[in-house]
Amino acid sequence: MSYQEEGQGRLRRLRTKQAIALAMQNRWKEAVAINKGILESFPNDVDAYNRLGRAYMELGEYSLAKETYDHTLELDPYNAIAQKNLRRLSLLGKRPISAQGGSRKVKLQHFIEEMGKAGVVNLYHLAPAEVLARVVAGDEVELKIGNSHLIVESSRRQYLGQVEPKHGQRLIRLMKGGNKYSAAIVAAAEDKITVIIREVYQHSSQAGQPSFPLKGEESPPPYVSDRIIRRELEQEEVLVEEPGYTIISDEGTEVLPPEETPEIEE
Image (cartoon, rainbow, N blue to C red):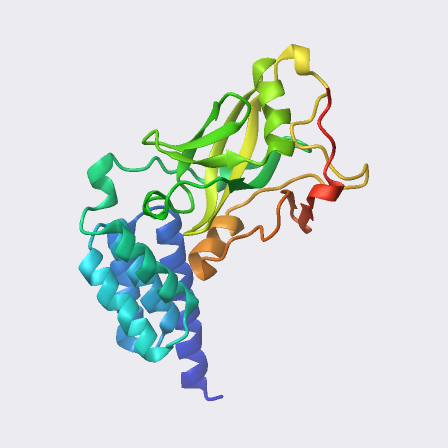
């Protein structure tokens, strides 16, 4: 590799990091500009086209987003991110997301917590695809106790889905005991929503009761950083592929499947 090629590669990596950082801060207009700049120098950069399409979507520029993702598919006909977002655009129609009040965004690195107080869950009994198309990673969501289920709603009070009963019932019991929680979307697709839930207040009556029990005493403490949202922005893949919840640490992730998750305490 020549010195010039090495310099170009270094510049490309730097601009890519800047583009992702802007997206993580919801600075979408600036993200459009920097991704366009990348494409001027590297016109076949599929990832830059995908990031540009995402920025256009967030700005409500749906026709430009569609054109951008179509161009991605010209370069890479089997690109899953472009295919996924073109399906999402078909569900969104012409009305921008912001037309319905906008979504409250959170910084997922704020979900850093001590052992047993944060976990990632998949939702079940999902809302229709046209509703799910309006939520993305980083959106703040609300937890609501239903008759016998823990329901997740968008910031617009739209039903999104339910937390799987094995974990939802435990959280309901703790919430009724006085605990409080915050939650946000980790990853979203037309057929799967993944949410991170964090205990923000523990009532004295619930002292010693972990919201997300670990598999064993040697399990590492959960550590949720911006790499989750970064993974979504770079790959847009759902983090949790199987039922259960995930304990996230700086040493990796541990998915607890249903047969290994703790039973509900009566």
